[in-house]
Every structure is written in structure tokens, then in C-alpha cells.
Amino acid sequence: MKTLVLIGIVGFVAQLVDGSLGMAYGVTTTTLLLAIGTNPAAASATVHLAEIGTTLVSGFSHWKFGNVDWKVVAKIGIPGGIGAFVGATVLSNISTELAAPLMSIILLTLGLYILIRFTTWGLPKGNLGKPLHKRFLAPLGLFAGFIDASGGGGWGPVGTPALLASGRIEPRKVIGSIDTSEFIVALAASLGFLFSLGSQGIDWSWAAAILIGGVIAAPVAAYLVRHIPPRLLGSLVGGVIVLTNARTLLRSDWIDASPSTQWLFYTPILIAWAVGIWYSVSEYRRPGARVGRCARCGGSCCTGTQRGADFRGSRRWAPRRWRRT
Picture 1 (cartoon, rainbow, N blue to C red):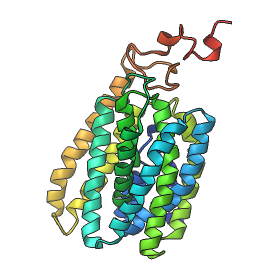
Picture 2 (cartoon, rainbow, N blue to C red; picture 1 turned 180 degrees about the vertical axis):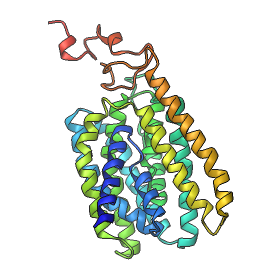
Picture 3 (cartoon, one colour; picture 1 turned 90 degrees about the vertical axis):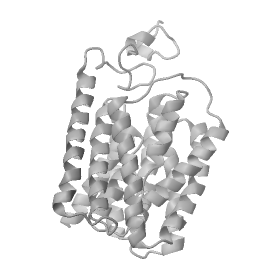
Picture 4 (cartoon, one colour; picture 1 turned 90 degrees about the horizontal axis):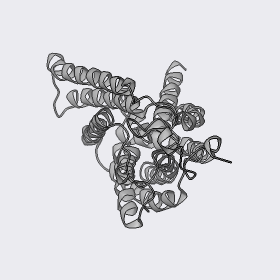
């Protein structure tokens, strides 16, 4: 019972992070399941089964708060589902001894990206209003879906930064659209695992615990996406993912490092993580960086010169209370 409660808390926290960042639910939960000895394919299958429910509730919550672009959801979600089904089939047909280190490498890479990306730059701001074409979204969805299923996570870490970097969609709608389209990816990946593995190795009680925790957190996360600084969340989550998967790799049969050798790697990781958190907090607290809700993106993503006040003269972006009657 204690284990189920802890796993439920993991699902709750992971969904809070995912709903605020648009990434890291699968990466975080899969990493923790691997850390307690779960089979890689079973871990990914368990997480994706739980994600069917959490992404459905998360997508509905983001839609209610106006955070979803349905054209983007359709153009990226369907190719993502195809990629996820293929990725689940591939992961199910390789040995556990090979899968665990490979999955850890994928997760470690994604963790490094999250840590560096958010600590250094935070959420990018760019050119809004330009259309996102299918020729960009379809290959992105296909690749992100494959990585998500085969690596136990990656839909958000691949899709969210790519959409943000395009500068063509508001940050809050990037997060909401990625979270909503992930329902298609989770459903397709789950079908792929069930066809390849059956129910072998899947702990249904764990999936239920993750699901319950995530469902509780989903509406909270959709609301908090407008208030929590994504930069700090990215630094915290990225460090956890890097540290945990470095531990898995160092203890795997590929490396089998001694405890003293392991700490030679853990120490610089911990120091870099602490520095990253400090830098994120410093940037957030820097004069001119901590601003109110931005009238354009609806959240705390804008810093420096891009403040909510800058847009108060715009009837298109300004909240109703700012508009002239």
C-alpha cells in the first residue's frame, strides 16, 4: 500500500510538471520505475496506459483554460500515434539487458536537454502568428512519438521545444496542444505494447496509482501553467532525470562501475544541478524578470522587455479588463 501511495505521488508530481512545462511526465515516471527495477518495456507500457487517462483529463483542462490549438493537435498527434505504435513494437522485441541501458541513454540525453535548455534560456519568445505547416508538424510528430514509446518518454521534450523554437504559437498553447495530442500517442503506444507483450509484466495497480495521481494533478497543472516559472521547473526536473539515469547506466552490465567510481560522476552532476537551480532562481528574481501575467501568452514566460504592460495597448491581446470600452 505504501508503494502504491508513493507511485501515486510520483504520478501527481510528474503531471504537475508536465502540465506546466509541456514535457517530462513520461520521462520522469519511467525513470523512477526503472530505478526500482521495473522491466523497461513494462515500465513504458505501464506509463503509457496511465497516460491515456491523464492526457485526456489534461487536454480537457487545457481546453477549458484556452490553451489548445486544435489544428496543431491534429497535424502532430496522428503522425505521433503512428510513431508511438512502431516504437512500442521495437522496444517490446529487444532484450531487457539491451533495452535498459539504451532507454537510460535516451532518457539521460533528454534530461540533459531539459536541464540545459530551461536553465540557460527558459521558455523562448519569438514571432507569433505565423502558421505551422503539416510538412513541419508531421515528421516532428512521427519522430517524437517513436522516441516517446521506445524511450519511455520524449513526446514533450522533443515536441515542446521544437514548437517553442518555431516562435509561431503562444507558449501556453504549445504546452496545451502538446499535452492534448499526447492522448493519441499514449493510446497508440499502449496498443502497440498490448499487441506485442500482452499484459506480461504490466503492473495494473501501479498504472492505476499513476493514473489517479495524474488525474488529480491535471486541472491544477493547467491552471498553474500561467503562474509557475517554467525555467525553475525545467532545472529541477532535468537534474532529477540526469542523476537517476546516470545511476542506472553506471550500475548496468555495460559499465558496472564501483561505488567510488560512481561518485566521481555523481559529484559533478550534483554540483552542476545545484548551480543550475541557483542560476534559474537568480534569473527569475532578477529585477525586470519577475513580471505579472503576460497579456500575450497568459503566463510567466515573458521576461525583460516582454512584459504584460507592453501589450496593454493591443486590443487583440489585452485582457478584457484592460480594453477600452
